[in-house]
Length: 216
Image (cartoon, helix red, strand yellow):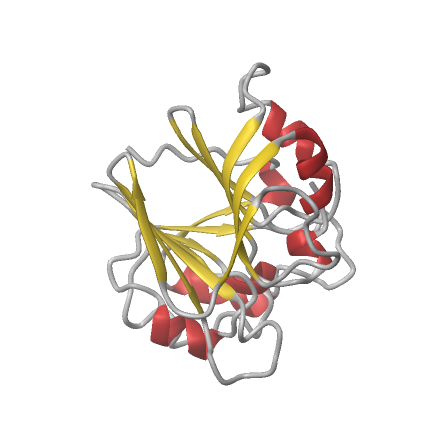
């Protein structure tokens, strides 16, 4: 998929896609998991309007019927019957016993990364926190303390993890969504050193490619 972020949550025949990655390459990843006869993605959540997070939205829309999009208003605006909800306050819903919680990381910041939507997914055995491009101080303050799986903020940027960012939570797995040989130098040595010091297992898409996690 390259430098970007996209997470597909599958609960039986229900699919939720959190961010889309930068371009239509994500379609091949989605196609490996959604049956060929299933042409619907029930929920798409967009963290913020930057290409590496929402660039494939319309390519996905051209292939699948999207029932509901949560996020900042996309540009251009949807011209279909897809339901759209702009995230202002906390939005939460449950699908097949799994809780999905969406909220803005900051209501006051004008910075597009700091005001991104973050997503918490709670299962009976795991809490997954998808942190988009927030900074390390925000991570410390808003990440659920029971988090077991963390999407490392901002693709492993040094600004996404500070030495004390993980003082209040102890995830057992950190996932870094990052493109191979990207021009930003992600993930940073600083972020990797913090994760190593905390003895947190690290999975990286630039090294392992597409990652599959069983949340049971």
